[in-house]
Amino acid sequence: MPRGLPRASVLESLRLRAALVPSWAPHARPGRDLLRTRTLLAGLESRYGGRPLLVRGRRGPALVVLSRRDALRVLSEESDAYVPGIEERPFGLPTDVLRPAFIEIAREEAAQLTEGVVDFARLDARWQRVARRCVYGDGAAGDEELTRLLADLTRAGRRRARRRREVLSGRYDTRILDHLRRAEPGSLAGLIAETSDDTESRGLMQAAYWMMGLGIISGALMQTLALLSTHPAHRKAARADPEHLRACLREALRLWPPVPALSRVTAVGTDWYGTALPAGTPVLVPLAVHQRSARLPYADAFAPRIWLDGTAAEEWWARPGCDGVHLTLAVGTAFLAAVLREAKPKPIGRLPSPHRPIPHFVNLARLRVRMRPAPRKSGRS
View 1 (cartoon, rainbow, N blue to C red):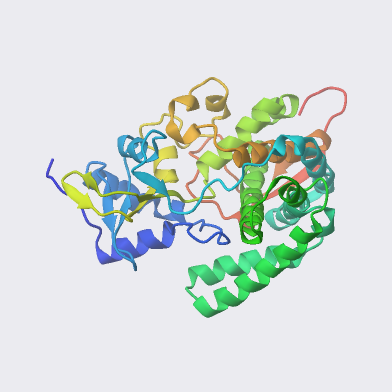
View 2 (cartoon, rainbow, N blue to C red):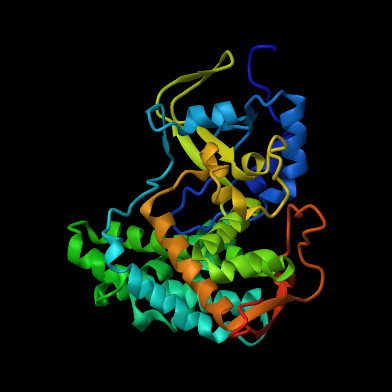
């Protein structure tokens, strides 16, 4: 194998940058376009033998990691050569005390989704209420402007509209601070006020991250419902066993990761296959490449069993995660369980089927399921 790192062409760099935008900004939700470039990434992986790829960026080169071995090198907890580009875990809150209340909030909001046709817009509106109530309290339940500002910030970030982004960021921060100052008991904002001696700016960042972390899985919740509507055996198992339902949600997150890449920055100069990278070089690990690697026999299948029988535990991307991940999965699972307890989703239109490979991209706007009353006594679904 030749020494040195392959370099992406200008066109390849533009396409990869569009999909793998590092989530440096605390308010910007990462793009959801990575799976559209899976063919490009697979081609690069094959062409260069899985070696990392240097991509041209506006601030200099970035390294895109394509092999499992190199991903482990970058993400190893023992390594201090690669650090998060931003602080990844601004949590450190005793959130377990709030989990029962958050699960009850999820159940209350999910009760509005047990009849009629459920599409992404309808589900997302309910889930964003869950996120706002958990982070800021019931006083923020109807603050749809807060969620709209976050979406507008994301769009402005992608378009590089710097002035508009600054204006929106100021408005968003002001709205967050208003809710934080209420410090409503039973919310994360209240917990931040009770347990943290941090500055106001750090409290704002904590709240923004919690809101982003909770809000971002609404797509996975819709995708899970869509998958369960076409996989009746898994729907029945998920209705009977919360652990199976949690595994179904984790499968949706594996198949269609809402965060396109994990990002790190070199803390010191490093050597990659004979190429020296200076400190401060961004390193991106695209999740879809690894979670849908061709070496995985279940890569393009809906396989909740991998989260139950230990199969997924062999993969680095299936690590347990931080407190925020645990809390989000718990609340998301409770949300889906409340829907399935009262109704069963039936497919509308062409949804992911057990008889075909799961597609690498689904248009959330086109996902729809019809909710039918769930059987009460027979236990059949």
